[in-house]
Image 1: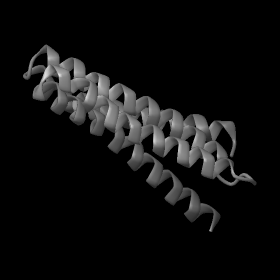
Image 2: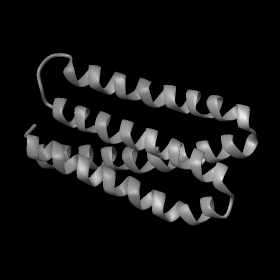
Image 3: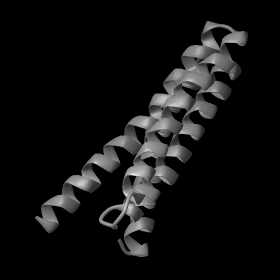
Length: 128
């Protein structure tokens, strides 16, 4: 995969995550500072994992060896850890922080995952 493709993927993935955050920001602002902080933290963590991990997966796609499977496994594991550790850390502050963190995690995860699926579907369609 060319470096330009990896950068283009990262740009699309990051942009989709930013759009999701901007759409949910009014909801978080109405819930208070705690919800805003934990929501942004959850979003930031999964967006960074999605963009960085997704770019690594894109870079490894089509290469020989186990690079692609390793990138895919590490990226999936990192996201799983974030989905467990984030709400666990927020639990000490109450249900509001936990829900805000979960919403933030999904707001970062879903756009990155959708971008990956679309990217690989288009890539597969181009190469046959």
